[in-house]
Length: 304
Image (cartoon, rainbow, N blue to C red; front, top):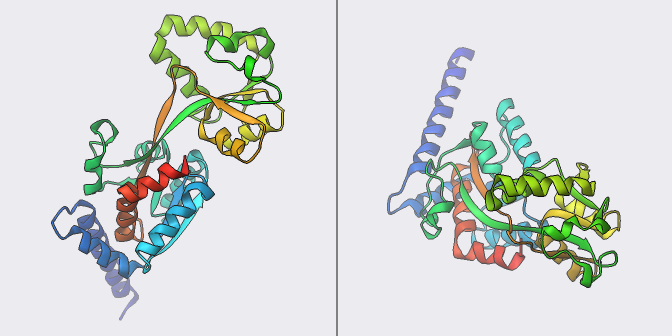
């Protein structure tokens, strides 16, 4: 067989595989579960890129998924949402897709805008409220995250903990507050939350006063990194932090705590299937599992 013929056959095989994958992504027949499981069994593995905390969520999900479907080897890679989007983009551009399912705060939306995901349907989404569904079927929700301030309990006694956004304007906190400027869930979400809740005029007046506090623009790491800096005493307070991060550290004895301020900002983490995923059936099976009651209970227990 000539090289040209071999290339033609190879291309035909890839097209056939792509057609099969597309069929299963859109298939809603009564035997969907059976087809997904049979296909996943043949694929034998699935790769999950996620922003979930490893010990609290990723490992429990991997363990339970592996016990439920022992014929699939699940691997996971944990990173911040922005890094996940960049890695997937690089893989798709290079034509060497490794990750099958991606998950994180805003990851689904970012990947959709960049054309990195493929649409899919799952009966599991029926259990979720309409506002948390994507009409184009490009992503599904995984978890809600709430944002708070994080504070060092040695530097901020309980009697002085800010309880409102106005309390952050107290001169005693000037130069002692930090926020994340390199993430959409940091400074941008803090500002947007108050603009939506208060209206432009009130929010603008508040931000003019907040500017006098000389807030430190932290851009050297993730929300988790900033919490660690608060624990170390580098900053007394951090704004718009995942509320569960300080609580997890506090439970381990760290001098840190979180405080929700009204209005509380929140985001929905989303997940999607990478365009060109090598394990489409296993990807759908993992998504079904995470969205199932069993998967959601794991995340509920993880506190992430």
